Image 1 (cartoon, rainbow, N blue to C red):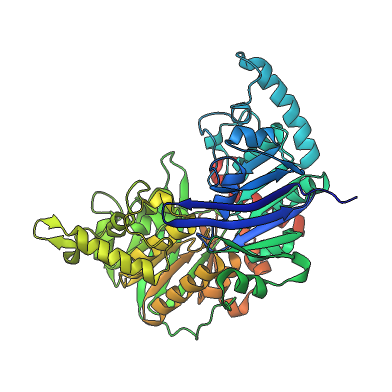
Image 2 (image 1 turned 90 degrees about the vertical axis):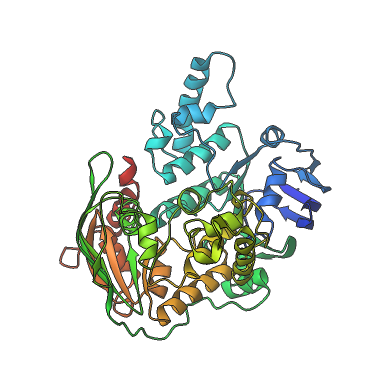
Length: 531
């Protein structure tokens, strides 16, 4: 007797105006498995899952849940069918507690007290069953993103979900948090839950899934057993061509010092010191990678260098000092000095989500002569320039008039990168350049960073992806708790040594057990949130 698929989609199609997001897609997901779905940004992965969760209605096609044809007109119908979804950008109320978020929309009646009592009791059981430990009375705004993701999973399990959809779940997680997430997913699979994992990270697919389906340009191109494929084969299926899975670069030839930072100190708005006397240099023609678990001062370093946070100490660019406090310390003055900045959070700091792509490409550069027509901005010239940038960076769809919020996360990132990299800056500050970006775009972005370096420009790279740091950097500085713990050459170090430095352990210390290293990394990743 054959087991019915947990989910079966037949002939699903969905168009948004002239854009065909999904075209005649069929897929079977077996119960008790982790099924990966991969594809380039804009391939239609999130649209397909949004149809399954009731956010969108398919133009054509059928949905079967556990062998039964099911209509899913909205998310309430999906929840009733046993489907839960954890979105890439969490759907939590930040000034509510964990418990309040979990029961929101699933209250048992007009009085909240019985619902909260029931949720608290069930939360204890779920934490015991799946290792999903959270502090029930903590405010969402006070906990780290890894813990917030646990809350989203708990919300789904509290609503009796047997099928979990996770959309790019590690896009905002530290490596330690991602490892913990996959341990949780493994436990859920052991308990018979069915998991659909949307990700662009091939290593996660290979390490975690049982089966993987590949989408390209709105169509399903292949479904294979993970054990019978390879990263290179999956990358080719995703992109339609062979993809270089390593960074092809020649040795750097560093020149003069472009960026010189001495004794840089920064305090946050609560008076907590986040940078504690940072010293570093970046030379022309080199990439300095900043490694570290999120929350150890890397963000504050980028903010001060980018001109939207104050600090004390000395920063010079080409020998000339930068203002670190007051009204002159701003992004516009930095851009005038040849500094371009790709911020870590594209949605909060890199884009105005309700503005069109062409408006975002002009964002920060709207005073440029090429964008002016007398006393007014030349909108036609900006749109033409945006279209050219979108073509070169393969932004999909290539529509300058489309609002930033209507692009996928990876295509939003490409818009920011195109705006900053094509300015030919003397110094590029780049934070988390490939977060949420597909394998083909990662290859392209890495090539652009190295091309800038090879033109004699200085690049300061911040990334939580150690393999990215190792691949792109000519030198690596490791940060922990607001300090630079040390510098290493990629050819003379490895991920274990960097991991020790990221946990605050120097090579003069006695190395602790591996379990302690992982605990230190996990703690460091949430230290800035008070978890």
